[in-house]
Amino acid sequence: MARIKLNFPNKVQFTTELTIRVNDLNYGGHVGNDSILTLMHEARFQFLRSLGYKDELTLGGDIGIIVSDVAIVYKSESFYGDHITIEVAIDDFNKYGFDMYYSIKNKQTGKEVATGKTGIICINYSERKIAHVPKDLLAALQV
View (cartoon, rainbow, N blue to C red):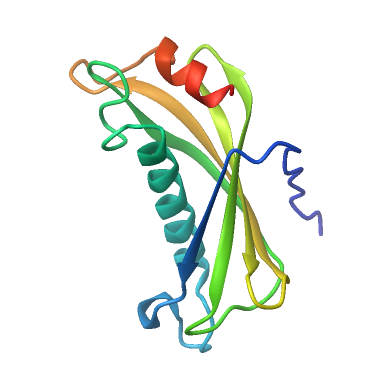
């Protein structure tokens, strides 16, 4: 069976720390696969806030972002109360978007929990059409 392989970029642009909550757990008692995506979303939101944006819908006029694809490679379990570190990196820019990568690690053990990627497309929400990446956002992401 072919496995997904993600190559996390060398340049980390943002890091955050989160604590695993009880609602992140599944019936197996560890973080559920759906919760990993939610943790990635939280890291993305915090990253954009650190750049001065209030949300994902207003990144330049009526331009916001939408996730076009997701890939996650699970490496190890994570449990209630674990402190995790999520590193965010940006790569593969084009005129309409870019890829955001996430490296999720257990802060106490250093063990890798998961690596993920979201394909991000810019969209003009008032017109409901794909849009070019706003110049200010592109400049902030390419630092």
